[in-house]
Length: 427
Image 1 (spheres, one colour):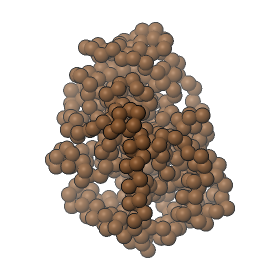
Image 2: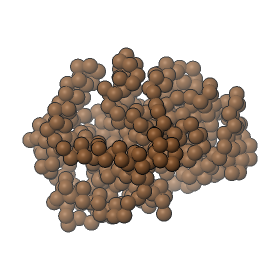
Image 3: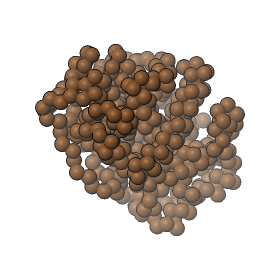
Image 4: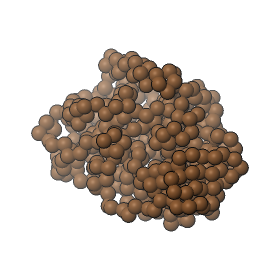
């Protein structure tokens, strides 16, 4: 069983209501827009285009939410994986400020879409970025000041150790950045909710429909095993699961594995003694830990990125050991679920959005920071196709290089490079 296939049995699939599988595409059909990929980005693109009156087809190779969108740590947070300073260096200061606002708008969009379409995805607000070391403490304090001063983002506040320990039953963290505007949800329920909203708005969704080849042109043709779609516009939102469909895009991203465990139900009192106020939590190490509570009072704990692309032996045991470094009082607790998945990263950890020609759009490179960004990215593509491309075009200013080493050697080169970051986390 591959790491990707482990999506079939995890806490999210077991705790979400069963849904019927949609039919695969049969024969030839024509649409205004063909969206490839049934994650948050693809479903958001389909939803916002359908609401504008476009005839939209979404083609998903497996089932809605199969990839990262349906199995992630599900923390809805502001910003980019590479950091705002890096974004401004890559895109320019003025463009960087607008791109910052895109991420804040992404959080607002989650609220708006969930409320408007009645999506029950266990949405909860409040998140902590926590510091393990003194240098991280200083960085968080500076970030808190910069967010308020430079971006007018005033939902954050800086917490010293005593207040952190009043919220989390651990001695591991020396400081935190609390954001009342960030939060978490049940990711599979969320992406399925977006898919349903897209259908009710007029989009047609096909599952078990991998795209095997794209003929580009003024009207593109997308080939599938049992049919084909002709469309004036194409939006590629499959990330690492495009699996070589567009080689020039594949060279810019790499799949890395991340892992999550879910404990047995702890009971309300014990669960809430670990994390107050139902907060989501992530540390600020390069190879980070992240955790939160579920609706049925389990602890969901993730981390331990694998840059080798392999599912290492003992993943459940190793992730549990990391959990016990944070909460040693859970030594008696059983792990009920353990699963993994792939996220797509770019060399610079900045998102990679753009066009291939005039009518093929793509969204990729969220670098593990996509729960809120994917949704607003889909809206940006819909806006661009409708002729309002100003914000989407700013992302094309961000330069992206291929991973070094070519397709054969780039992963070993990445593994060696990541050793430096792992060592830095320990200092």
